[in-house]
Length: 102
Image 1 (spheres, rainbow, N blue to C red):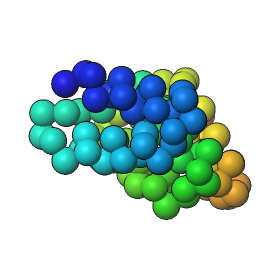
Image 2 (image 1 turned 30 degrees about the vertical axis):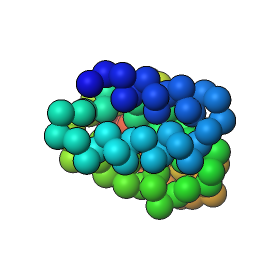
Image 3 (image 1 turned 90 degrees about the vertical axis):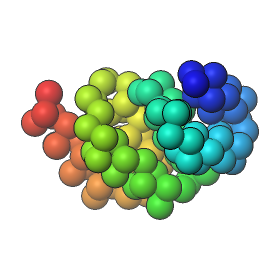
Image 4 (image 1 turned 120 degrees about the horizontal axis):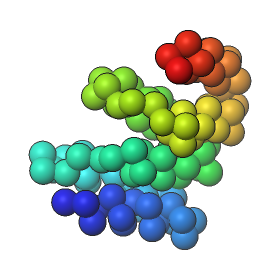
C-alpha cells in the first residue's frame, strides 16, 4: 500500500507535520503497510520541524530493528532530526556510527 507513504510525504512537504506523523502511525498498525526510506525521511523531517525528539528516537529504533540500510538521505534526516531537536550528543554519536558503517 504505497499510497500511504505518499500521504506521509505529502503532509510533511506541505508543513502538515502532525498529520504526517499520525499517518505514519496508522501505517505501522496495518500489517500490509511497510514504510520505505522515502517515508522514513519524510516522517523524520516532520519530527525535526515539531521538535519531537521522543518520536524521532522511536523511528531511529524502528530503522535499527528492521535493519534499514542507511542511505545518504536517511542518514542525513536522522542527523538533522537529532540536531534540530537539540540532542547534539546523539547527533555526534550517530554521525560517528554512520561513518563507521559507510
